[in-house]
Length: 257
Ligand code: A2P
Image 1: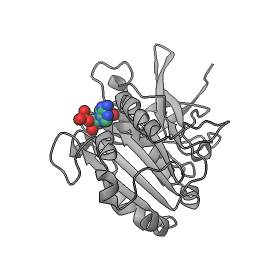
Image 2: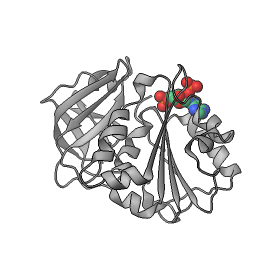
Image 3: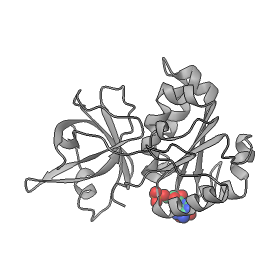
Image 4: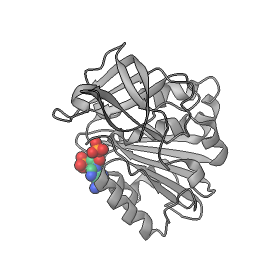
C-alpha cells in the first residue's frame, strides 16, 4: 500500500497546450535520489488517482517540481492540468525507481537521452553536484516534436550556468543538445537517428559511443526506449541495476501517455 503526503501547489507553468509543469511544497521527510520518481495525483471520490512522475527538482531543494503532459481524456492529467496555486496534490511518502547514477559503473561521459516529459528525471540529475564529480562530461539530449515543447531550455542554457554553486561545473561539463523532429530548428532528427548516423557526436565534438567510457540513461517515449536499447546493445552496452551497476539504465515507469 502506498501512503501519501498532502502537498500544496505553489506555482503552475503552461508550456504549450499539451505540456505544463508545477511546483509543490515538500514534506521534509520525503527523501529521494536524483532521477527517482514518486506516485503523485489527486483524490477522486476519496480514492487516490495517481501516476508515476519523476522529480524535476534536485533532492536538495525545498520545493518539488513536476512536468506533465495534458491528455484531454486522461483520467489524471485531465484533472491535473487545471491545478492552481493552493490546491492539494498527493505525493507518495516514498520515492521509487532505479534511474540513478549509483546504478551505473564508473565512466568518463554521461549521456542523458530523453524525449518529451522524459526530461524530468534528468533535470534533477544535472542539478546534482555529484553527477559532475563522477563524470568528466554530461550530455543532455532532449527530443520533442516542436520547439515550444523544449521545456526548461532557458533554465538549462541561461540559469544553470550562472547558478551560485553549480554554475562553474555546469559551464565546464554540461552539453545541452535539444533536437526537434517536426519543424525546423538548429538541431533536427530523432535521437536514435542522430546517434546511429553519428551526427550527434560530430556536432558535440565527441567520439562515437564506447561502452568502456560512456554511460547512458534513457527516459521517454516507449518506442524510443525500445529502439535506443537495440542501438546500445549493438554497441555492447549492458543494462545496469542496483545489484549490478553497468553501462546503461532505462526508466520503465511513465506518466500517462
Ligand atoms: P517523431 O516526431 O519523429 O515521432 P514523446 O512521445 O515522449 O512526447 O516524444 C516525442 C519525441 O520522441 C519526438 O521527437 C518523436 O519523434 C520522438 N520519437 C518517437 N518515437 C521514437 C522512436 N521510436 N525513436 C526515436 N525517437 C522517437
